[in-house]
Length: 81
Image (cartoon, rainbow, N blue to C red):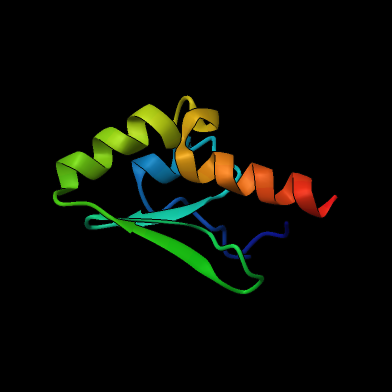
């Protein structure tokens, strides 16, 4: 990277610490992840921002392999191989 080039910064604290390879970003009550189709994404919308943050803390930023969506994505990729 050259001096003066833009550096993409994480949009949020959670973005910085997300470990899940399928995670993209989050906003308000929504988590955005890879979709099952190329050029698509999956959005999970929670009843509250607190519920979303709790989910992210438990799965996206820690034990992502236990997330139901991540397990489905892993199974899909294993099937494609």
